[in-house]
Image 1 (cartoon, rainbow, N blue to C red):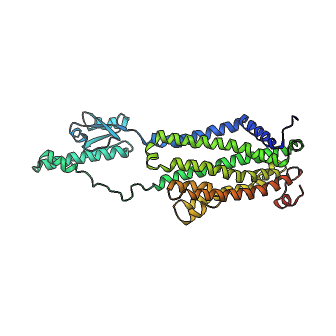
Image 2: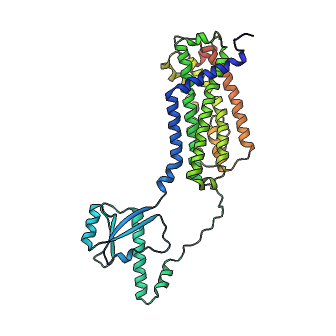
Length: 397
């Protein structure tokens, strides 16, 4: 048996070569780690920034200290420690020195005032105002003959209860952020790997390595290998990022996943749409690389392909809310991978709609592959100058 692999395996040898080269590329490893850090930060940082209890220290005199007792019904988000000082001058000195965050002192009118240095933290100011007003109101009611416990009950009456007519409705802002995350991930990965495919083709043309490759590997097998190799790496990267995002949300924001159970389903659909969408567009990147003769020419030949990715991405911003435009864009092949997962998040699609959209993308991918294959085969061995789209289409293979 000949040691030369059969045609059916040559595309895999090309794919294996592409993957090995990318995995040895420090830039690729760094970009993957950077995207992973960004995804994890997006999942964890909001909870870290907004969570926890704010603690403040406030100076008060013997006159105003009793006004700062904790009121019934206060939330635990702000904790206030009261430091009693000798007089107002000592309190103001402590504020200026930064030893305390604010001071509550008697005012000239006989009421109390909150004193800060350059400002009073908004959360602290609200708590101090509520405590002083409550204590003063209880004092006035008691002086009018109302029992102190009755006065406290009046001042701490619970707010009106809330009753939601649609408690299971999806928060539109949450779906907007998650939908935007899907769209940005799709754009970033497709562009990064698309340019990688195009640059690989140009480098092989510029160094004339491709002339050696085509003597042993058919041109169509070379194209398939490049798409499969980069596609598998892109799939691995997108699965890693999606899994990291879901894991981060499960740890940092478990209530979000409980309130929006469609997130895992939308993530799975996003990965599926990414695979088909990448297959649809990656062949065009290869053709763009084949039409260029030097790396300097790649920008001009790749611009039309880049527009096919960028324009649908910006179009998704006009389809944030459910409606006719969003539904139409979810079936348009170039925008469907970025819009249909958002519709799944919103819960307004049946299981057949994503399948229909996938079939539309698959049909478009078949057309794009046929066009890209002709452009690729006709341009790959042409050197000296970049080819226009018309020249690449008409030139004999």
